[in-house]
Image (tube, rainbow, N blue to C red):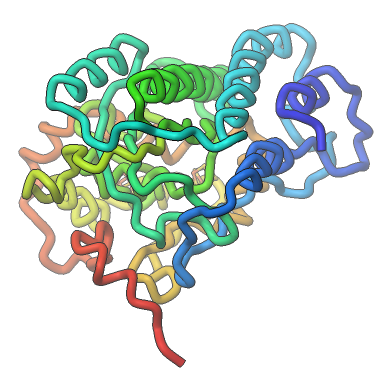
Length: 358
Ligand code: SF4
Ligand code: SF4
């Protein structure tokens, strides 16, 4: 299998035969996943874990906006795609040959300096979580127990025109920045003696929105995206996996995720559901398997439209939290006791690690 750089070069530079399936982002992710094979042992997913949502729609290349860009647009993609793929590749190689950490605990000063460095590199919000096994995707495995979760902000203006090439460029820019940040931070952790494995920016071995919610950075809205106080849904999420055992997770600090009211607001709002061009968002989230989580999106329907229309993004843009400030929405919200409740996040990880018998 070719590496991510070759894959992206294929997508951008090759002339795609219109009647054959278009280029594959899932193949890019598979080429980064394969580095996990270097580990004798990985933390295993729960039997309740779900598979990673595939990107590929199987549509012919002629119907994929990414594969049929005019040259002038391809030239705009290249400065984002090449660093993204390069950093993803460097990050993936950090999974080759197990790193032997010499430290397991970090001082408050180290955490403070780490966060300052992350912000300097462009991270917006930073949180910490002990990764529950149900957040590891089916068939994957994790080298470390803990995740440092961070977000990057996407600018409002280019997103406003979604679905559009400008919006897609901004999304790619977010991925590019995340790949750079996670690689740098993982290297920084290793230099200090800790394990540090960057999560794949495009989508990795764990469920990033779920980890971000568990880390207390926001709440997952009915569009399936994280909503945070600073950026609404105008953000992307990435992780660094580490062995630092005393990270200030919300559990360790005795706090609870204070953003979960957002889902009660969603149950009244439903704007993304009304405005999704292909009705791909369920009118009410449905329970996802037996693990107490929720499923909000009909992925197959979303994926086809997404692939034909610059990665869509309409649900992200129309969300009131992406338009007005979180505080303003919160101040006007009077509560919604009738809203359906989903067990996200599960505050006690032990609750969910129980494997059903029989
Ligand atoms: S990305 Fe577009 S198609 Fe997919 S759920 Fe959102 S609005 Fe609907
Ligand atoms: S548009 Fe409304 S329903 Fe959809 S995620 Fe945003 S707040 Fe929730």
